[in-house]
Length: 162
Length: 458
Image (tube, rainbow over all chains, first blue to last red; front, side, top):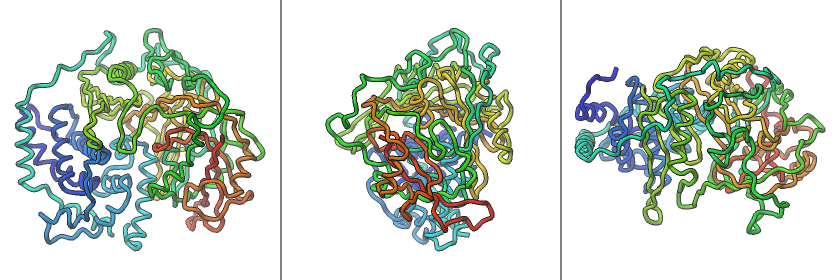
């Protein structure tokens, strides 16, 4: 349920607290380093503020933010803003000193189109139809990508994905 | 299960408090900046704030009804030219309706005419430049590389398809052939994309902002949506100095519905709340193809204003079965006009209806052939000639190369326009489906493995 009569200041407080981590994960899934990911997330919040779209629900708001983040990252990748590729362990070294991202690093070796559907399906729990809507593509395409991604992950993880 | 590890690892990624504080500060500063210009106003008076409207006058009787129900392969996403691997198969059916009619004054301009958004309606084929005998590409280039070759350079991997043999055998359409048949074309157009894609980045070109807004309002009108606000989006690219370009125009409708127009003229409608069409909820995934096809025909009737640029709206339903379950895709394209135009539309241009798991409409994607310029009208190889080329080892496998194709293993051939996004030209190809012996599915589902091979048709 979205709050009623929210002031812009309250909205900023809420969306940043509520969605920063989610969008950072989305962006890190798309881009290759933390700086780019954070830039993307901030840009997306700015777009939300400027466009001020009306959302029917919190789920819709979240979906919109994820979609715009994916697109923002694609634009950045196209634009040459993407500076370097680093392993997730290194990317997050500043804040996650003790953590390792074994599976995540394997997933990140997949092509971007596969990473995205894997993330949205397995982490966010979207259906393939919902992912198709999010990514502006067809359900069949999403299903195909998901299927291929699983097959690749089974090989890369030596049979252990499902 | 490693996907649980994946989730656990992702869960560890949290935005730092410092990042949140910095972001809030930046956003609060943004609040103090001047407000952007006032939103654009609707251009005509008859827009209404209704959501989905199918007026009685706009609904037509389907004169043709179900013309054919066919099992065919999808060639819609031929740019990626991928078909499902593993436990997957496609079922697809098409059905042409009678020509749709729309009351006077309620007709969006010809959206499906690839060249001109405001072109006269009823033009299925792209705008034709002066024809000339095919003498290779202008500037003396040879024909474009096969998509497979181009994609191989990008490191993309193609996978083999496992399909039901029945689907192969039942596969017929205007351009797919039974054994011994030939295509009904002696020549086919080759097009050059007018949208520019450079090596350093994508610099959008195509429709102007005014044209994009016109398309937006036309589509909103066709849906009975009242556009409250229009917002252009620009992108900047740093390669070779900062380049700026108009990217999309998005119209916002009450309730969170948005209409986004790209410079190619492609339109996406995302409904703020899922819509229950007058035709009812989409059939369940387990229902028969016929139920899905009839449902899509009902949608064609209901959404006639949206499809009014089409001479012969034709329903095409794709069924995709995989380990994750069944998925149905609803696609409407214009099979009217010339056969060449219909072939292009089937491959590249049409309207997709997307539903959620509750059978409610969540999105419309209206895809047009990119702005195309006719390069030449080129002689078409016969299927036999293409088959000879294939068997001589000069075809391109869309999946990882397996055994060389043999005549006995060719299950079906299709004629498609390929939309490789990296290619400058759009060229027709013969797509051969070649059975790979010894790769039958181990599951009890009659799936066999087929490999796609492309041979240029011109």
